[in-house]
Image (tube, rainbow, N blue to C red; front, top):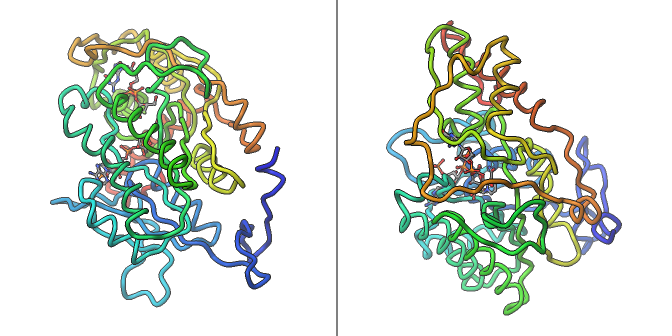
Length: 364
Ligand code: NAP
Ligand code: G4F
C-alpha cells in the first residue's frame, strides 16, 4: 500500500496535483519528457500530465509530412509566452541528441514510449526494430547518465514479452518472446532493471497488456476492425481481410493505462508492474462486439488473408494486475465490449465528418 499512502496531493488552482518537492514548503511544478509523444499513448499521457500542471516536453521525429495529428489539439506555438507543451526534434537512434535534450530540459520524469511498435512489421524490419525498440532504450538510459541529471524513468514494456508463456501472466511469469519486437522489448526491460540495480536509478517497467482507443494506429487489429465497420456501414467497402481470429488478447482502454504509468513514477521506490484488465477476448469475439454494435453480421464481411499471419504467433495474453491494484490503487473500468463500442462510435463519427467535410478533431 506504500505508493498510495505516500502520495501527497493538493489543489493548485483547479488542478489536483501530486506534491513531490517540498523544498520550499509548497508545490514545485514538475517537468516531463515523453518519447513517442505523437503516438496513441504519448498523446493521452501528454494530456494527463498537462492537466496535472506539468510542463511537458515531447520528442518527435522528423517526417516529410505532418505526424502530429494526435497532439495538434494541445500544440502550443513558440510565440506563446509561457508554454507548458514543447516539442523537440530528435530520434531514439541518435544518442547525442538525447544527451543534449536531457541536459537542456532537466526533466523530473522521462517516459520512454517511442518504439517501432508493430509486431507483424518487426518480422519485416527486425534490425530497425532492434535498433529503435531495443537499443533506443539503452541510449536513453545512457543519456540520463551522461547528462548527469536526476530523473525518474518509465519504460514502456509489453505483455508481448510473455509470448508463449500461458496465461494468466503476472510480474513473475517467465518471458518467452515470439517476435523481433518482443525480443527487443525484453532487452529494454532488462536494461531498465540493470540501470536501476547498477546505478541506483529510479527506473521502472510498466508491463502493459494491449490497450486501444479511437487514437489507435489503423493497422492494429482492433482499429482495423472498427474502422472497417464504419466503412462497411457507410457502403464504402464490403470486405475486411484479417489473419488469425483465434488469438486472445486482454484489451483495455489507453487513457486509463497512461494513468498507471504516471502512478508508477510517484512511488517511493522503483518497481515493475503488470497493467491489464484480466479479461481475455479472441479477435473473433472482438469482431462480434464491433459488428453487432453497428447492426452488422461480421461473417458476411470478413475474409481470411494469410498475409496477416505472423511467422510465430502469441496465442493468449491475459494479465493479472493485482500488484498494480494493490500498490498503485489502479483499476480499469473499460473492458473489451465497451471498448469496441467506444471505437466503433468514434470511427463512425470520424468517417461522417470526413464525408461531410467537417473539421476533424483528433480526440474524436
Ligand atoms: P504507437 O502509437 O505506435 O507510437 C509509437 C511512438 O514512437 C510514435 O510517437 C512514433 O513516432 C515513435 N517512434 C517510432 N520510432 C521512433 C524513433 N526512432 N525515435 C523516436 N520516436 C519514435 O505506440 P503506442 O501504442 O502509443 O505505444 C507506446 C509504447 O508502449 C510503445 O513503446 C509500445 O511498444 C508500447 N506498448 C504498447 C502497447 C499497446 O497495446 N498500445 C502495449 C504494451 C506496450 P511517429 O508518430 O513519428 O511514428
Ligand atoms: O493488434 P495487433 O497487431 O497487436 P499485438 O500484436 O498484440 O501487439 C500490440 O500489443 C502489444 C501488447 O501485447 C504491444 F506491445 C504492441 O506494441 C502492439 O501494440 O494484433 C493482435 C492479434 C494478433 O494475434 C494478430 O495475429 O490480432 C491478430 N490479427 C488477426 N488479423 C491481426 C490481424 N493483427 C493485425 N495487426 N492485423 C490483422 O489483420
